Length: 276
Image (cartoon, rainbow, N blue to C red; front, side, top):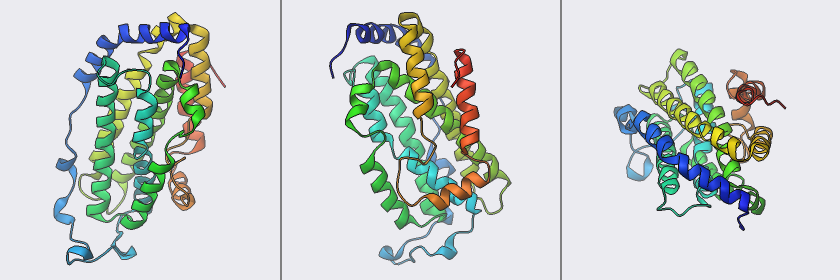
């Protein structure tokens, strides 16, 4: 895409602010290890290796936990297209490229951890989940031509601000529920808490760029914030077809509801004295 003089100014301002923000982000991060929190002893082989394939009777967790994992995991599977949107304006070897790469590795850790729990503890039909993963990654997140043309540096950052805010709220509530529910596998609630903590730090990190962007072009920055606040999608949305049951079960428990998401979005907008 062509880069306008204003976009150039914004990119330069972000690049100047980047080292301090990135250093703080890396220093505050938690390099936790997904394999520590997966109950491997609970796992067993599937039929291909002489075991037994999944049956519905394998699911012993609460339905909210089971379906909550599905929506959260499929959202994390959008990582390739999110990375594409975030990386398109800078060389991969730049400071921005390295920061986006680190963020990508953290998000990938979330997907790995969640999928390991599902496969080992058999919390959901793994074959159905794999088909949905393929659909989600193929479909992508905002995977259309306008998303390339319309996503300047302000839009990139604003997109992740609202995405991470909804994700942090979602995994926090799912962790709360999993801790109370019967049959939650060992380590799962801790994993959900780790993901929520990562998402919260990522949210706070992207938010740090906005004073810089507002100084350069307040009108454009506020317009991007408002646009993303109106177009951000719920956890599990834009992933795969056939998730209505999962959404109904999870939303019925008060997790990731439209009303809850709107409250999160409005709380963010209040930071900049904005409202929709």
